[in-house]
Image (cartoon, rainbow, N blue to C red):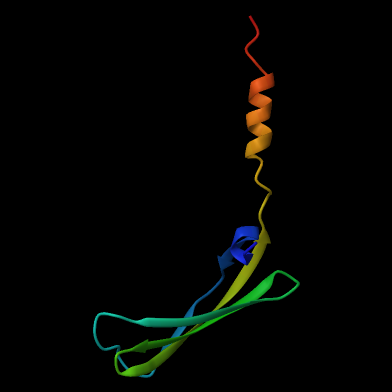
Length: 85
């Protein structure tokens, strides 16, 4: 199971530093995310265009475990709990 399937994340901040203006319509985002055991993480990315790398982005990430999928519980319960006449 992928990290994003088990956890939700909140991006606490975002800092972007540019060495120059980007060129063209497309930007490459070469990113990595690291998550620690204490539910705090860090995401960092290099930004590039057709002329090469021109900047970096970095952000703090707060991770929270997702609730398990309870859809099967609610479906089973709705079958057993009918309307009372």
